[in-house]
Structure formats: structure tokens, C-alpha cells
Image (cartoon, rainbow, N blue to C red; front, side, top):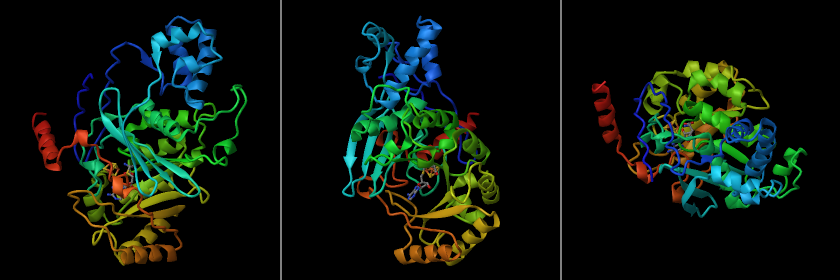
Length: 413
Ligand code: SAH
Ligand code: SF4
């Protein structure tokens, strides 16, 4: 397997993502997954089809790939038999490789996936009575080192490509057997209701897996465009939530260009505490972050912003913290709901979860302040699939090891 050079670690406080070319496939064929209809048409034209043919074939192939979940060109029955080997020779229909699939006792499923160039990442599916949520990763690792997050102890290897991001949703549909079996006529619009009310398991997507999605903005945007496309995976933007640790400069673009629901990992209401547990706070402070939330395009009382708040024993869980949280959200007139997340432990984590009584007291204060503050039930803890537990063994490095490397990189300029 070809090896991909590792991305440099940009540092704790001022992380920027570094784009890195993906190692090309050894057989020279191009992977179509992750490409838009226009990009597919361009490739077909480059490979020799005239413009009109290229557009028509691209429309058919796009539909087969993303709407029907075809995994071979042979399955594309409305494409001429002679055309299918032509496609086969030049293109592939990629999926991330499944290395391991685990099932929790509570029904949560976790998949360990591998990119074509050999990097491991994870996705999680959480079934509930009335919905099923797929938790999608945006990066292999994360640059942001939040102190309570296991992914933050990984070295960032690289951004996932649009194909690797949309590929997760496609794999989940494969695993759940949920591709629409409907009619062949793809010119006809299928209504959103068909995707939500017919007993489908996968109804919602959260960009809450490994990585900070707003530091991989273009790829996340392009992948979600395919997920939301009516002739693609056709999931409504109302059923997709992107979670950010607070990359303020990208938030307006997120609302404008992606248009999904926003979740913000707030986790603390004072500068010293947030600086410690979400180091990005040193760059974009609480006030700046809340102002960006107030300005978030599309936020309203009907589409409230979710504030995630991890409950850390003795760190951020006092009555005063709860009151300050209410005050802040009101001061910025935010259409907000708060999601209290019991801290999920991992080996060597420097924190403990607040007691259930403390979590309840905190929730009550926020609720009495007029803001809904449900406590999220931890799911999939037995297979390390819960929030903040994702971390792939292949990229294991200790924090100390990583700090040393970062210092060495800085010293060498
Ligand atoms: N990077 C993005 C999205 C991925 S993390 C972000 O930080 O928002 C998804 C959520 O899980 C975030 O709210 C994150 O703060 C939370 N989380 C991380 N580690 C956790 C842990 N150990 N226990 C509970 N929640 C955790
Ligand atoms: Fe990265 Fe989110 Fe984990 Fe922070 S909480 S280290 S931003 S994945």
C-alpha cells in the first residue's frame, strides 16, 4: 500500500489545515465517489466523450452512484452494454475499506474504516426509537487538542476527501440495506417523505466524528452537497448537523454555503476554563464565538443552535457556571438549546464525569432560565463509540510525544 507523508502538526493554539495531495491510485483509474455531476462530466469529456454524451452519461452515473448505491458499472442497466467496460477501464467506485465493524449492547454500531492510502478513521451509527443518526468523521485525527477528547490526542494525519466523507454515508446505507429500490426513471423527483417516514434506519447525520469539520471546509461542503442533492443521497439539510469547536471565521460561510444545523462545542463559560479545555478559545474567545452564533445564517427559533456542554467534575459544572451559561445565551439573544454531555472516559483522561445529581442540578438551572437542556444519554461506551472516544490505534502517539515533535518542528523552523 502506498504511504502518505504525514501532515505537519500546526500547533496547539493556531491550527491551520494543510492541504495535502492524495496518493494517486496505482492502476491510474480515477475514483468517482466524491465528485459532483459536473466533475464527472468533465472527466468523461477528458476521456473522449463529446460534451453532450459526457453530460448525459454523468447524469446517469451520478444517479446510480449516489441515489441507488451501485457498486459496479455493470449494475448500471440503462447504460449501453458496450459503454460499461469503457467506464470500468477508466474509473472506480470507491468506498472506504471496512477494517472492523463492532456492535454495542445498546445497538450502537461503530466501523473502523481505512482510506485507500492506509489511514484509519471511524464512523458510528446510533439507532433511536424515532430516528437513526450517523456520526461522520471529517479528518483523520484533529489538530485541536481539546483536553477531554480522545481524538484530540491523535496526530492529525490528513483531511478526509469529499469521497471519503460521503463514502461513510454510503457505507452506512450499504450496511443497513437502505438504498432506494424505486423506479429507474431518475428524472422524477422523489419526495423527502420517502426518506423519513418509510421505516428507514438512517435518518440523520451529525458531523461529530473525528476531526474539526470547519478546518476541512471545502471537502465537508462538497460532500454534504452530494448528501443533500435530490438525485444524490437526498437527505434534507434539516436532518444534518455540523458540530464545531468554534472556528469563528468559517461559521458564516458554513451557514451560507452548507446551510445545515449548527452545533457549537461551548463546554465552558469563563475564559480560564475554556482556554484550558478547548485551547482554540485562546484564538477565538467566548464573546466572539457567541456573536458568530448570533449572526449564523438560518438560525431561528424554529432552527435553534445547539450548544454542547461536556460535564466535567469540578471543572465547569457549578451552579454559577449554569447561571452564567443562561446569562450569556440570553445576552446574545440566541435561539439556543443546550445539550449536556456526560463526559465519556478514555484511558489516561485527565477528567471525570460530574455526578448524576450535579448534571441534573445544572440542567434544572438552565431549564429554569428558559433554555432547554436535556442530558445526552451516552451511547456505545462499551465499544468506545461514544462522543470523544474515537481514536484509531494506527495513529497512536502520546500527547508528550506529540508535544515534543511540535517543539522540534518549531525549533527547526
Ligand atoms: N470537532 C468537532 C466535532 C467532533 S466532537 C467539535 O469539537 O465540535 C463531537 C462532540 O463530542 C463535541 O461537542 C465534543 O466536544 C464532544 N466530546 C469530545 N470528547 C468528549 C468526551 N470525552 N466526552 C463527551 N463528549 C466529548
Ligand atoms: Fe477535535 Fe472536536 Fe475533539 Fe476538540 S472535541 S479535539 S475539535 S474532535
